[in-house]
Length: 82
Image (cartoon, rainbow, N blue to C red; front, side, top):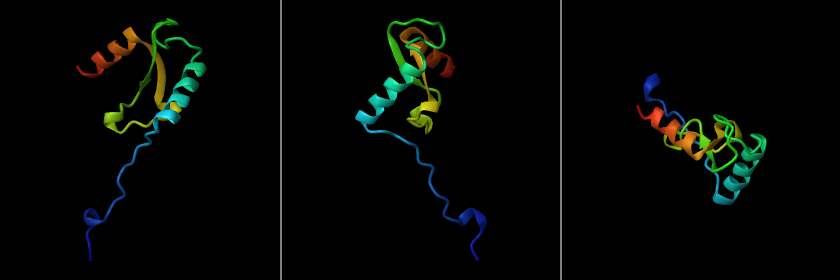
């Protein structure tokens, strides 16, 4: 009999969209957030940030994305790398 830790567990799979689908989702997130940085309120130089990074199995999903301006996006990444 196999032990519990020897069972074949399903691999964690993240949702990563193709470029066309991702751009549609990105536009949807920007509209949802009112074309404003959700940190400082700026309406220029907007980017979409993964709350849970792709490198940490973060999904390309609306719930994992937030609109940030370039400055706040950079600050977010700096603070996460401390």
